[in-house]
Image 1 (cartoon, rainbow over the protein chains, first blue to last red):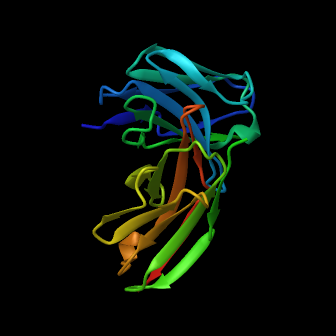
Image 2 (tube, chains in turn red, orange; image 1 turned 180 degrees about the vertical axis):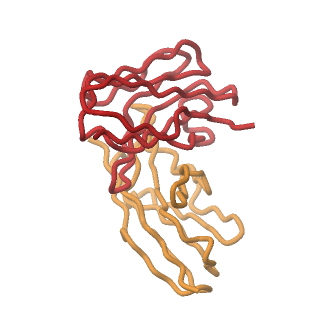
Amino acid sequence: DTAVSQTPKYLVTQMGNDKSIKCEQNLGHDTMYWYKQDSKKFLKIMFSYNNKELIINETVPNRFSPKSPDKAHLNLHINSLELGDSAVYFCASSQGTGDLYGYTFGSGTRLTVV
Amino acid sequence: GENVEQHPSTLSVQEGDSAVIKCTYSDSASNYFPWYKQELGKRPQLIIDIRSNVGEKKDQRIAVTLNKTAKHFSLHITETQPEDSAVYFCAAFSPGTYKYIFGTGTRLKVLA
């Protein structure tokens, strides 16, 4: 039983398209996150939701919009995709705000914009 | 803003030797320091963590030390094995911002 699952695992799309990545966790965690990992492996936080409420919103282009319909789901919608959006996007979840037991990461979505 | 520096960026060791990865954080309020291991093409996974009220923690071949005064923490892997080869990330949690700041990663290669 996968704890944090993301779909799709791979996404290849053309510049200018709009796409969504979905994330679901079955751990009963309160907080979910989106991270972007670039080609140099840097892990940068994008967004965090705690019980459906946005608590972290980093300096991310407003083409990126997270949506949390309930505390078990956090989706990421990206409008007007650009070449620089190519990266691996990781969803993660944690109990509380993350300083209890660390994160559980999803398996990642490799986004390639061509 | 908050920052975590991690060194070295790459590390090659012979099987059986020890490996040490060091991190320095900037936010003195940081109170929780996890380490993640990311194997090629896989997700980062938590391998060990330490809280600010503890100086050292050990779990079999891995240990983490924390020096709050110097704002340093380190990962020590003893008796390294080829399956330890991966990218390792340190992170520091800032309670004021609810954010983890990740280090830039260390690619560890254990040579058989």
